[in-house]
Amino acid sequence: MDIRQPCNIFSLFIESFKLINRSCGALIVFLLSAVISLVAIYAALWWLHASIYIVVIVSIVYPIFLNVACIRLIGSKAESDGTSLSDLFAASALPTVFMIILHLIYALVALIGMLLFQRVIFSVVHPSFPMFISLLVVGFILGIFLFIKLGFAPLAIALRGQGPLRAIMYSWQVTRGYFFHILAAIFLITVFSLLFLTVTRYGLYKLLPFPLHSHFDIIQLSWSWRLGLILLGIVTAGVHLSLFAYWILIFLNLDYNERNADEFRATVPATGDEAEDTLLSPTGEGLDVVRGEKIEQQIPVQVLKASVVPQTNDESLAQHLTEVYQPQQEEVANPTEEDRLPTILFDDEFAKQMEQRRAQWEQEKKKANGKKPEDDDHTPIKMSK
Image 1 (cartoon, rainbow, N blue to C red):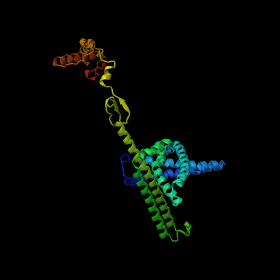
Image 2: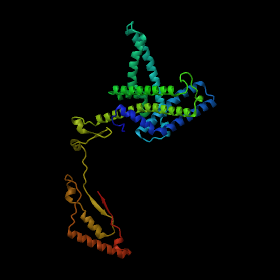
Image 3: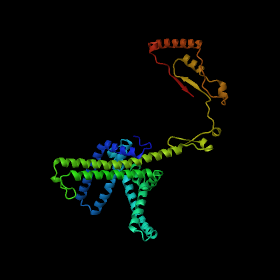
Image 4: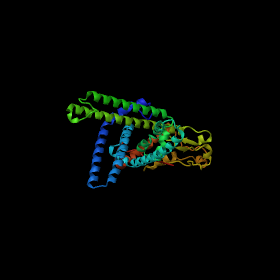
């Protein structure tokens, strides 16, 4: 499936499960690396007797770093760019800083919005209408709208390396015209998650040898049940990763659509004189075109003389080639005519003369160094202007 072309939400949904299946090995290595590094960091903090503030900061920053690295890993597999895991970790440092700044901006905006929202609700809503329901309904609608318009900002930071403010603007831009498209995707994610959770819980409720709601002791289960629960946990993790990959695929598809639209707008020919003066490269960058009236303003460059200098010890052959390639005097005297290299007409008489010259030259060479004529190399001829 080519995500660089416009795709519907259902094909992307199926592709997300295929993507996680293809990325299974890399995801396992990533999870093992994340667990080992996390244990090593906390062990180092305990050994150094770090303060509680440092531990809290690490507990906040490092999961964000792992989240950015996971996004880059899934995005790399979706785009098939072949980036190694070490390069993914190294390239996730700066986006992690941008992601933290983005979260701080969101928290500040959310706090200000809640205060203003509460004042607006109290001043607009009729007193007879329950205030809690008003806050819930209006807040839910506004939250869905903002999530659709700004929900791709973290992905723009992680996958495209954009800054926090640029990512917010790009998320707003890339969702333009796709509001209900993204809303349908969110609905599909929500319905599938609830359906999977309901089926899983109902199955465990019916199949477990003791009530799930009263107590749950894994020690009482047999090894077959323990293995089944482990497999169920792996499947659950795979489903959640697939839904996460689905959101990433939606962003990548919209991102490529936006890029293609920008390239199309850049390559549309302009009108008037401006269209004649400018060509556009495949990347959309302008290339200046030299028009006829511009050529007249430039200094003309013409070939006034063309000659051939033979590199040979045979004086007769060198003299002959020099005479043949000697430029015509009228061409040199009149530089405004069409510049061209002299033309040589090989007729029968000329061919006989060349053959005689060559035979004579080979005999002289044979007498000089005792070589056979067929063993000698071709005479190099150097052309210059």
